[in-house]
Image (cartoon, rainbow, N blue to C red; front, side, top):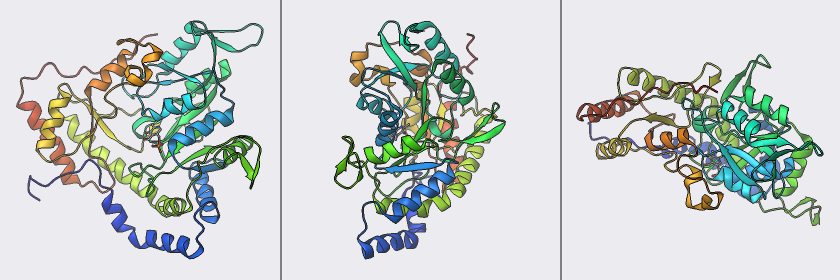
Amino acid sequence: MTSKTKIPFLDLVTPHQELEAELLAVAKKAFSTAGFIGGQMVEDFEHEFASFCDTKYCVGVNSGTDALRFAFMAAGVKTGDIVVTVSHTFIATTEAISQAGARPDFVDIDERTYCMDPRKLAQYLEHQCSVDAKTGRLIHRKLQAPVTAVVPVHIYGQTADMDPILDLAGKYNLIVIEDACQAHGAEYFSKKANAWRKAGSMGHAAAFSFYPGKNLGACGEAGAVTTDNEAAARTMRMLRDHGQAQKYYHQLEGYNGRLDALQAGFLTTKLRHLADWNRQRQDAAKLYDQAFAALDGVVAPFCPESVRPVHHLYVIRVHNRDAVQKHLAKSGIGTGIHYPVPLHLQEAYRHLQYPLGSFPVCERVASEILSLPMYPQLRADHIRRVVSEVATFLSSRQRPTAVEQPQPVAL
Ligand SMILES: Cc1ncc(COP(=O)(O)O)c(C=O)c1O
């Protein structure tokens, strides 16, 4: 390999070439029956993915966004409700909240894990809300609206700290919907349960995206909801299919949000490889971690002992992020930023009226994060070259002080 070899941010071609025969067999099977919508392929995938996530039910839908929306609606989130999440996520999290008729609201993230900070959630619930004496509902004092659900996002393939979030949800009677769109197979050690729990099995329901670049990606759009709640699963099956459980008998108005049979077949095939692919991502992350440990000026991902992450993304923090990114691009190394503008500062949420400074951790993190190449087929020599290019850039500069290691925030 020459130093000019390009290292893409993501390689989606190689896994499809490796699995070409298996995937073509799925397509042939679908063509031979013309069973493109619903049917056995969808049911088989739902069964296998529920089992992978340690849940009773999986409802296949056509995107992670629909998965979130249907999960909110089936859980009883209503027009006028407030649903609390984080601003450091893809906009689909809050789009789905709005599409369910609710208003998204935010709490800040933990500076080390980039997931929802349970201490900030506690402060929000204790100081900004109060329990209505008559109805027993939790009301946001300023907005005068009920807070009904909370959405921890398992960002970058690492689960949020679920024990305290679930405790708070229990205390305030809130529904927990996990956004597990980036966390297929991630695990969290619950001290309460004294057991490892799979992402997607801890809340009332959880949404997964199978967008092609995800750890488990379809060959197009796809998503799923996992849950142990039979009634919610039944409602979501209707919501995805025009509100019908029986053809042309509509119990409610629903959506065209089904999972294609072809995508379900592809996903079943790929699911058999997911554990290996996640292990390869973990190995790649370990190599990055070891190399970055010797480098000042870079904050590598932090992973608490209570989490087994699946490294959907490998995200470092550096000062001068944009210049580092440009340097890597010039060296043929692809990178990404997930996400450059926190949701509360997006034009789309101007009406929520959050000024700059509302969520300082999230805002600081957004200006420093850089997602490096990460995929199962990423080679060790590629990882070494990425790190060496970051090191070259940093040593060629009169850098400002190294990024400060974040300190835990006192309550
Ligand atoms: C955190 C998060 N939530 C929701 C979604 C939405 O998933 P989809 O693109 O399948 O609708 C994504 C996908 O990028 C995501 O990363």
